[in-house]
Image 1 (cartoon, helix red, strand yellow):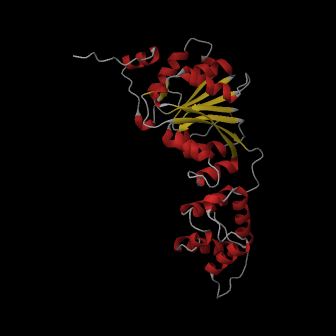
Image 2 (image 1 turned 90 degrees about the vertical axis):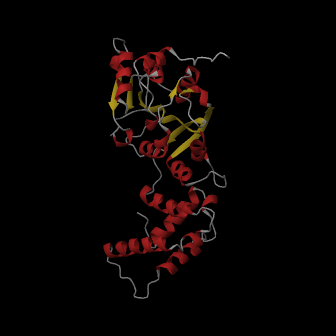
Image 3 (image 1 turned 180 degrees about the horizontal axis):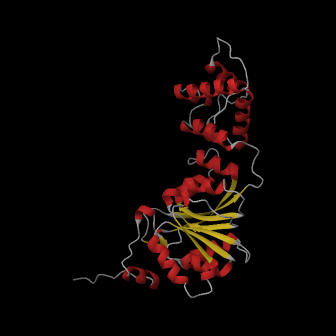
Length: 306
């Protein structure tokens, strides 16, 4: 009989295993175990001794203790009460205890306190809503260094014309500068996830662009549903026309503007696209300036997306 190699476990994970704690895949719990990756993430974050750092999903605290070494305070948001207990036990009786604040709960439903910087290996299933929760958080933070699923990270940094360029790409890049930092293999986690990972740096644009993000998001949502079609074709979809006509009538009513009996929303939309020279453009090739021009053209004619 060939020998079966026993799986190597770190001391921390052995302790957790002894206590019967199984990592919960529903919470996306894949603990980053490689200390070199953790150190590299912290180095690239540009931490300062006066910083308050936010960590999302601290797990067993491998990154947390290294963060506590470098900053004034760490705010750790963890949904799993079992891991909260382990993290508290890990810092108990050490100088770290007074520097660590743990928020127990779902980060997407939590009102986040002030923080200077965010460093985290986040649960991948909340990647998109979390990015926008952070980018719309006020007051502004300096930057975030985050671990994502590789393809999600590639979407964040994709440019017009790239295969993965999408609404996520342009919406994120409107609000922040995004840079790819490094790739991280599956074997750096316990348990190993099914996908490769990447680390990105997100730096919010401060001040933000002078644009209503809800309006912007509404426009890009329509344009990217069929990103390979011309805008002229995209805006002929019945549900899109119905929604924009409803918005137009509400806007006109609020501003005491009369609507002619022969009003044709289809023709108005087409006229706006033609006059702004965007009717033959395709979302997959449009950059931020193109969409700003298009949004202004619609809004100036009383058509809104909010």
